[in-house]
Image (cartoon, rainbow, N blue to C red; front, side, top):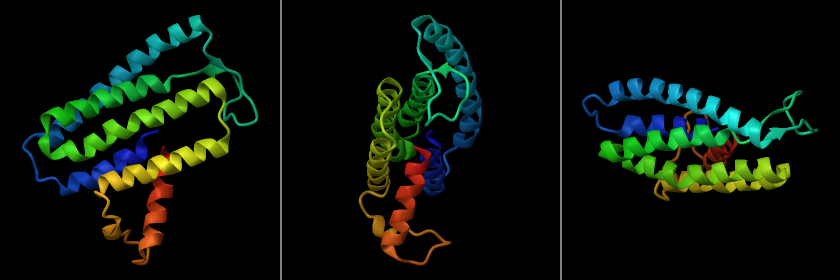
Length: 171
């Protein structure tokens, strides 16, 4: 899931100077992405069933019945197309969207590798923690000293640790 990236982008949106129509466009393109995801998942599901891309539940599974593998590719592709659109058409959004365009494919690759080879939970955790560090360094331009959460004391390492764990949890 790219929820943490979306949360961080919403924080970055507060820093953007209001561009005429930006939020209106966001309200238009959000549902459009939902519809595109729905349609592409439907098409992917048919193809995945034909190719035998079915996940059988095991001890790590959160599902009880066999499910389609690799569906994250659809969501990530639509999401990346959406972000690319914002990158191209809203200059104030370029920094944050560039981070997503750089990092999101790595999350996609980890999910794909896990679908194909059933990566251990420890390997996935380490990879997601590394990605979280990269995301935070890119979003803060390496100046994480200014990263401060209102509900935490102003201790640099504590705020950084919370941010990394928060981002890794949602990726």
